[in-house]
Length: 363
Image 1 (tube, rainbow, N blue to C red):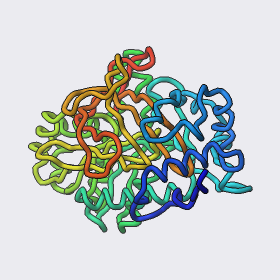
Image 2 (cartoon, rainbow, N blue to C red):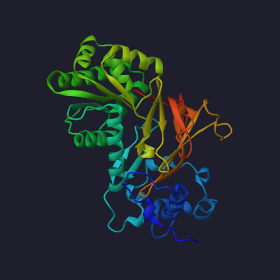
Image 3 (cartoon, rainbow, N blue to C red):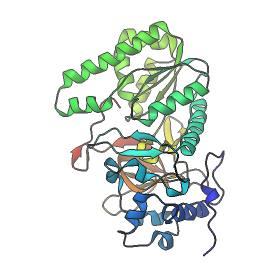
Image 4 (cartoon, helix red, strand yellow):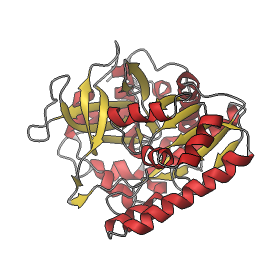
């Protein structure tokens, strides 16, 4: 067996390595090597009916793995850190999912990967129209959610003061689940009030928020006036938005440039956004992240232009999360030359996920 070059896994780097298959082989050897793999994956390997070190020859073979993301609700984060990082290992940043389907899933993101994602998001914010030097009003989850950390880091590196509004999306989902629509509306009004305090008094021209919150702002005449006077860039992420709603928001906020982001806690990053006419297309950053859009009845990929369920794979030095059937559907799109797997557009949630209603709430 040829010697594995683990340096292929090193990040940050400005461009991915040129040979994605060599990258994948290095990642599998790393995560399933006795001296380099994490306690979690070394335990899992003993339960598999195949040998990852010999049977994973290409990216399509990631389908051999069971979807184990639910294990991330309870596994100790120390067990997720590959031994190859040494002892003591780097201290991870722990980010959690939104808790849409129960207890949140938890990831351990190591400093090398956090720096890589920060650099990607600087590129994404800049390409989308972010105004460096003007403040960023942040109306997204903070706390255990990665979006808060990365938006703050990117804003500061671009010379912009970061103004966060405190938001707990899990509480809103609980309120909606028990049918307390009035409480949910009151919470949204509370968030808008906090945003209004910042807009009235501070130098902000950038806004990062979710579609439900921007739609709530669009129904408030005073807030519409404030945004039209001050905000020139809006990044929408988190919950989903259809093209008709996006067109309406553009009409209400005509002086604002809109950008969209699509990511997931389970891919430890977000996709690159490409604009095709009025549509946003999301290209995963391969070979680190690979999307498939599948027919859940057959497990096979749907034809281009058809809707299916999104399967996400994350492969990096610090983490390995393969074959994760997400709660999103999307239109399967061809990716740029050299991309592995699919790109996606018109992302939408499923109504039910793992036997429970998939509640989006404010995020």
